Image (cartoon, rainbow, N blue to C red; front, side):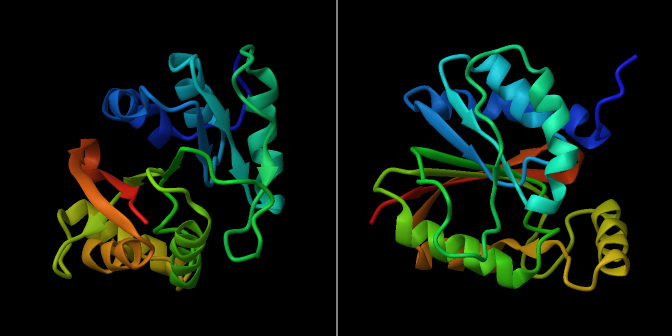
Length: 199
């Protein structure tokens, strides 16, 4: 019986994420994942993209959830997890050719979202890809009733959490030197948004 930490949402969306990001990462050697959670995305994507080195990260206090699945992974292209708080400077590792994060922007406080983009703007090389998966609002509106209910749940859980407005996040990205390349609808009223650093 599998007793590893488990998220059903990760299990539901991992194949769709792989299908979308695989062509974008064809020429990339290494991916930094921010907020790896249970490690399901890290292990699944590393397994199915064997030409990539995958670098998981998580807040120090959350690493106990992440470590078991990473330790059970049998491949050689998944690096040990690094503790990362996006608000602390400098980050403990360099920014590689691509950065991936799933279901994090609505969990972290907006100040952390701002800090994330600010540091990527400072520390990314030209051409760095940023791939963000999760729910977004557009023009201040929810894209579904389920997202509205989810946002209520987020705010009850932590007043600093909320589904972010796409336009507001895109302003942060552009201010950091990132240009929008793709905003793709994904299952369960989520999006896969791709930016590329041009500065």
